[in-house]
Image (tube, rainbow, N blue to C red; front, side):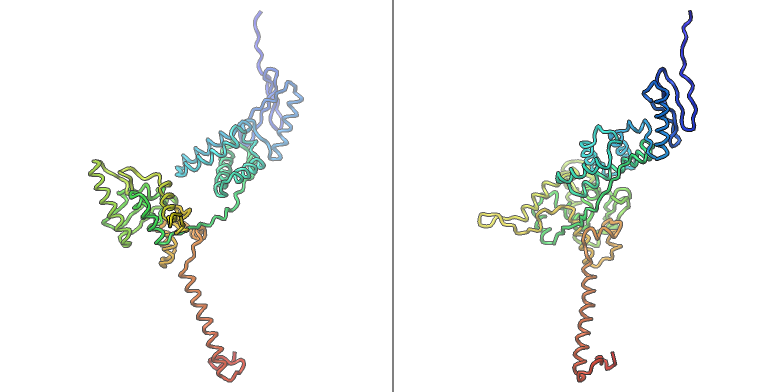
Length: 400
């Protein structure tokens, strides 16, 4: 007696998909967006399998069909796609992305992507704001989640209908905080000596402290041409930048002093120091605690045995305020905005509105014209009075 083997039944053809018996279980086979999908009906009943296939056909017609492999996509897959996206695009904000993903993971980790609904996102948003997170911070986290879903849809890992509605309200975070010269000098005097040239460069140029000033190397400083430059793809907007320091005496003197200091340190350590700003040859990476302590010491002094706030404007100041200060100083000096934006690396004028910076020279010029107008009105009334109070006669003697 010979053993016989059973082969799976041939699929039953229909207008949409087909059914196929594997062992005792019926499987559905259908195509969505050009991709073939096999789905286990989890039933030995041919009739139940037919009903499930009809339901999938109806879902396809309504645009809500979710393929079987889409049901297996979880938050971990969304996170992996987002990390790969940043890596391929060579984004420099990887640290910020990692922080945002960590918060999202605590809320959605282990969940299937299809379970991350609009309601779930709203609950997450409310919880983060209640925990004290800034509106702009929560917006960034929501934008990361929204982008992850977009990538999953583009890769056909998820249907468009699975993407939750995620909005990011305007945080209304107009930039505030400026340094007057006296306040800046007060903080500078309280800083560790190694940080003073770094902070003064930020104050004079308005360049981004962490991303542009800290990595600055001597090969980008040309003393013969009198310029310091940033190469393309090394700035936030990926555009190169040139700052002619030889026409700004304080900046020129600063770089000369820093070059001499670096040469002295190189001879003492016996090695080349590539970075312009450094602590004993090591690049400046962390300055938060030193900066905060310096602001506190410059703002508060002891008078008659008690602490008195003598410079309240320094409380809560951040290093990034130098960027806003430099832009305002350029405005006050009457530098055209197109030139100022090239010097500081701003791509659009909208940043000026976010910084709440007003061109004071333009305001003064406008008010001067208004003053002339009121003066002319006054002269006209005086002239009118000297002509016998004749109504309708101007100072020039003509009818109004």
